[in-house]
Image (cartoon, rainbow, N blue to C red; front, side, top):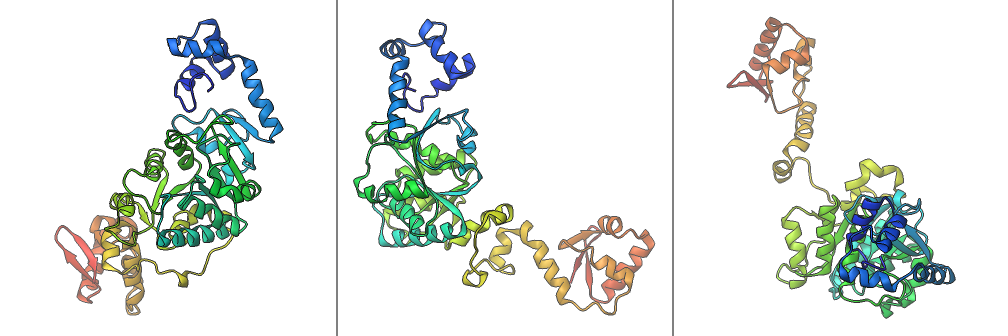
Length: 383
């Protein structure tokens, strides 16, 4: 990293070529690894003593150093493109791989609406057991971290500068709280200033650490959108706060992602329910559903947008509402085959197990009784 620069994919090219970082270093020094003239000039000015100085500084400042092969290195990051070769950590990162983590990002100049929404949603997610990941910048990031701290929840700050650099000054008061409730992490060497080019680089870590990325407010060109792009590439979910004003430029990036299929977040439950089935055992609490207005299963808009998901609910409801007391056992078995809106006679025969003459007789009787109706192509449907 000291030779090629932070997040340079060349690091991984050489590690893969040589087998590990140690052999890569000696290969670069002895000339067995091909380097550019610029890379040769840099490596000639460095030595292992330079790395030792960084290690000593970190030991003095109680900063942990995690390399890619360390057990405590976040396993989520191993699966992303160009993972950080080294992570500097001030705090506790040990269990991040087992935690429910969501990344919250947005503009440094949010509206009161954005701040209020992020504070409430981050607070509720923290109480439910989520770790809040953000970039420790002014604005939305700061609101997310502070909300998690207020609930004594876990929060991870991914820095765009050296781990020992006090930036931004506005967040100096919560650095210790983040450290105690989670961690500040960085892939940049200690002492690295918060240069503008650093922040897009670190965004892949923001998205890589989490299950999904929640964008609160983001104008076009916002760094938050880079994080969202990274999330899509990494297979993470993207959530968006619906805009307070569709004509406000601060929401143009959010609107773009909502149009592309991002999940709109009207409540913290919109995020929780995305992971409830898989991770319910990790949730600490869940507010009663009557406090949340969800999509109604018999809404025509909902059914049109989710036909495959909701067809079962619609048919089950139809079966429950009908009175089938007068039907024979054979007819009832056939009616129960209609788990889908329409059913071909071959499927009815296969599922019911009855012979064809029995099926044909029963279907005729059901049609006369007004329970089902026949459609072209030997297809039947519940009335």
